[in-house]
Length: 96
Image (cartoon, rainbow, N blue to C red; front, top):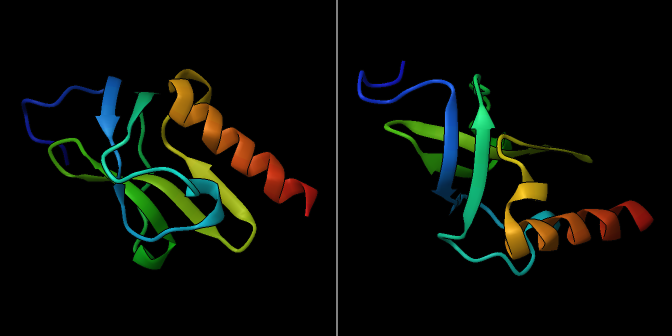
């Protein structure tokens, strides 16, 4: 559960804490800011799936990956140059 001071839905910029590097995050630095707009968050006991997270009063998974499936809790298309790079990385992976 979120602390009482944290609101859902969550809208705003948060920085990424990179748990492990992958091709989707190629060129993305620790602490890069991305834009979140959501009313829900993924919960997983399989912590090895978490590629990046963010701090929103608790640790929130921001990027998950299982094999060739990648999901984001934030909106790359709204996250400026960082998000554009992620989408470019994603398209490069799709071409392989």
